[in-house]
Amino acid sequence: MEKFTDKQIEDYLSQLEGWEYVDGAIETTFEFKDFKEAFSVMTRIAFECEAQGHHPDWSNVYKTVNIRLSTHDANGVTEKDFVLARSIEEIVESD
Image 1 (cartoon, one colour):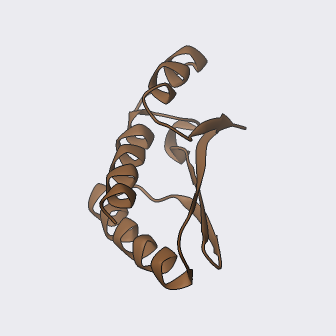
Image 2 (image 1 turned 90 degrees about the horizontal axis):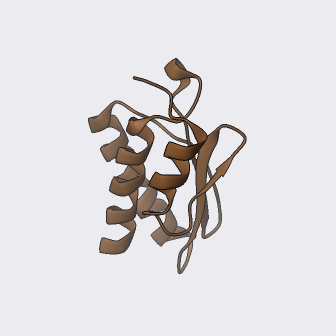
């Protein structure tokens, strides 16, 4: 998988609301009603990550979930990251 240029990353980010390019990865934060809802969404995201064979760096504190995506094999952001980001958006929006 080929690492994206800064321009490609900017173009793709324009299609995702709330995501930013920071220190070699794309990242976002979601806030939910409570811990149970946050963890429930994380579980659904985890199954999708496993299906795609691509896993985020993420953390959860109470009702907040921080997600950071990069392709370690490419040492940067690739198409895989944006495919997963769109999937994550769909999961969060369906909640």
